[in-house]
Image (cartoon, rainbow, N blue to C red):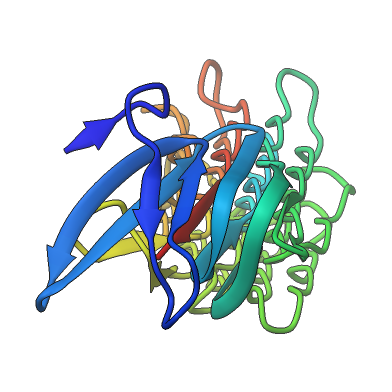
Length: 282
């Protein structure tokens, strides 16, 4: 059940510490194996406000996914994903910044834009790297790296250790297939002579209910209509395009990378990465 912060002040205790009373974000509560958890989910910028008490909290910080390249470009890399336990909070205000996804390249051939960092509880997760363009623009590094674009037959960009994986390499210019963007759980696949690279799979993290949630999948590479576009990685990665249908953007609030544009008219545009998310649980 989801309750707004205006209706519920979350209360928890940690050992002999005073009960924690906190607000901020979208607050949910669930029971797992006899333990009751409260969760503060931030889908945009906000503040986690502890009115009184203290507790050790679990946390998940995911940055915005990278935008993709156009015209047989590379998929966007997933936003950096970090998670942990035992962060001590006490009375005070904690600022939360949730990174937006990067903008995909539209119109003229080129790479997309990288996403934006997410910051909370002393942790900064790095934005997903942009996918390379169908011309000479290579991909950007990031939390996970963007996939290479075709005309340059470029290698995928590197990810950030502990946050994500590298993007995949594009095929040669004559094969017209972009590499997949990297994901938290796996590198983006390289393109072959007939198939664009798939986005790297994401990884599981804290959700707002007992359901296990997967985040930070990489975007699939784009290609010409005579080839097969790359699929998006699990965890919100967008599918690439072969010109028809259009590519898919990263899923909002997963940090998923964007699927890349393909060849042909109408389907060559890149797409936008998915915004990140911050979750605080206790």
